[in-house]
Length: 79
Length: 79
Image (cartoon, rainbow over all chains, first blue to last red; front, top):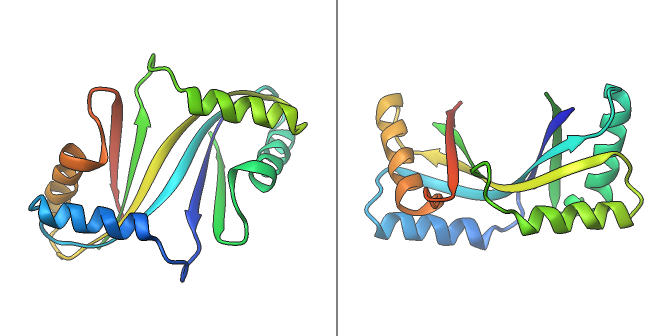
């Protein structure tokens, strides 16, 4: 079973990396970019046919390793 | 106009970071994880009401900065 986990910074958390990308795009001449925030995406294959079990495993993975829940949100999508 | 750009490694490109995450999840006791590949996600605000123009800007941003098209695929979704 394939899943995609997206980890993004919570609103209000400063994102210097995003700001740097925004600045770089402006100096490269890419027009109309107003705001950039960077996150991470994980494409994960889960070794179970049971959707609920897969969801539980992925939630555990996010809480334990993939996301820093103090400053980041995560979202699990199972394909 | 808000958009999300997802950059992922092409198939066949080695992903040591993903492998490391996979190993770490196993040692943390998260069960059933078979394969992990990491990518990047960019939440971008584009300063134009014209969808075609926004798409062109985002494509330029990907080609010039956000993705290394030799080893990475990118996908642009406009909300």
